[in-house]
Length: 115
Ligand code: 5GP
Ligand code: ZN
Image (cartoon, rainbow, N blue to C red; front, side, top):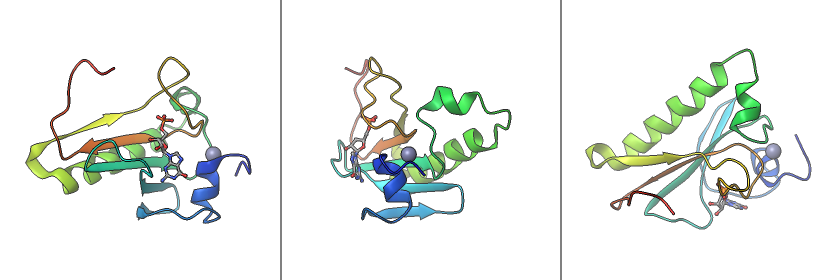
């Protein structure tokens, strides 16, 4: 728990959010500023600044769990229409909150390439 981290504080229940999934390792919340009709953030409860940090863990279980849960939530909320998962990483990657999270976006057609 990093007290200066907004997502750690959300995971600890100190800041309210709309929680759509939770277990001991992973929490998924509705994005406060949704960019699509479906916009969920899936993150580890434990603080990892970004996906590179998590990639240095010898145990890949969390990496697998994050994408498993993100995939299930995306499919549940959009069915066969499809969805997009995004992991913004670092300043040029557009990351603004330094606690790893997977964006799950859907409910409208997505453009490519992204901006
Ligand atoms: P990033 O830019 O780091 O990839 O994504 C951060 C996301 O977190 C943004 O989509 C932003 O809307 C969302 N966000 C920032 N602060 C909060 C908050 O307090 N609650 C929730 N639910 N989402 C937040
Ligand atoms: Zn954190």
